[in-house]
Length: 170
Image 1 (cartoon, rainbow, N blue to C red):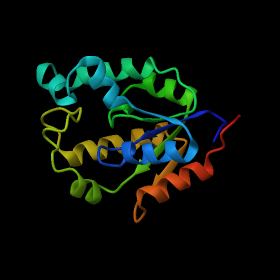
Image 2 (cartoon, rainbow, N blue to C red):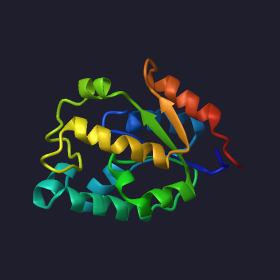
Image 3 (cartoon, rainbow, N blue to C red):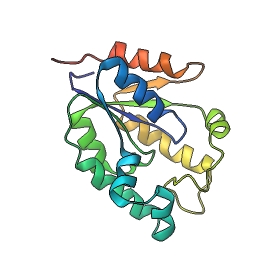
Image 4 (cartoon, one colour):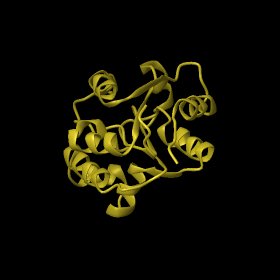
């Protein structure tokens, strides 16, 4: 990876971006930003409320706007799973950070996500979790500089792998 002073984690809801991001930030003595939390703070609403009051496309637009405002150094950034739908947002993240895809199999995600309909996942009403998974995999691959297969690994191991492969410039 290039010597960039931020790391961005991308992947499906339930992949562990927020939890691994916090662990990774501690390992590297970095700050931590969760873009879903940023959206909720700035909109004063949950992701699900935003979608209930408008739609998933509006949530994606808000997500893009929040990501484009990021101007940080020495941070781990955990994105919402739908960040990859915005080429502008992803190019911005690629410019300021190394982008790591936390790849988790569909079966494991299905076990982890029990609140698919109320979690605030930006998707059309007709889209199943399988449809969403299938659609997003190519986008995650496209924008990532590093893919971590999370199968059989715990969160600490994944954070160690990322920190070990990621050179931080002074």
